[in-house]
Length: 338
Ligand code: MRU
Image (cartoon, rainbow, N blue to C red):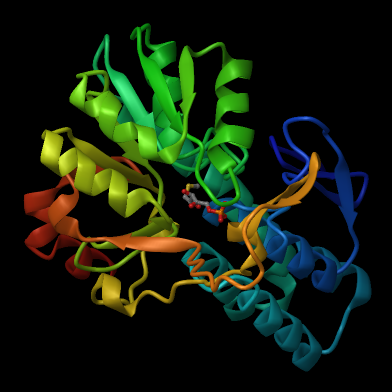
């Protein structure tokens, strides 16, 4: 049995994850031997990106279940702790719930199904969303939504890759994505490896590029979609959407159906993770640590923000592209409400 993706592998009975905190300078694979270890690498963002978190979580639970044969009560306890590892990415809860609601004999197969489904959904959504990208477009993206955030080609970055493979001559503008720099460290690196022309910018430079006519579309992923079409994504996404609205630039979200939360009516119901103050006072990484702000200054550090459906041109979910008008008609409630 072997599973292979950009940032997660299962080979010779061992689950391995690529430490994304060390990228792009070092590629180190970490052996995950139990769910506690997976929880700690998820919390440290060594494993990150909503779909990847979901897949990694269930593989680690299923691997441990098959090897340790714990009681049902112990398994459910570990699953509950895993479910709480990060609060905003609903893929995590959706995937763990699927694992705990299947029969015990189906636990390993269900984890495998979740892996393969993510690969397939990435193909579907990226192909579908690529139709919104035209030859010659300058495309802005925020955070990292590629092969490092999923076990397939990715969400928004997957669409960008497909458009490039279709021969469209695009140029990608990459928000560095403060505070943890997923754009600068991961997206720019993935684009470099794929040979797709791109320019790295600080988050506060998108506006000037839009005013100069360099950006024709914005594409982002999401960690949770509410039934009214509001969605949460990496903090800074809302600012991109507001800028796009002012400049009349189409703003698209690309997502698998595993990111829809059937229990959230609107974006106000989405819990937003708050992280440690030192991430904003400075930077920490494989390059070392610098704290430039005074310890005495209080910090606000939400990991995500919510963008209202009013600012969205469309959301691609799996192989369907929903326009803002369709989203506002209540289509997600009709399709996903349980
Ligand atoms: O904190 P992160 O790096 O896990 O945040 C990731 C994002 O915000 C992505 O845009 C999101 O998970 C959707 S794309 C796979």
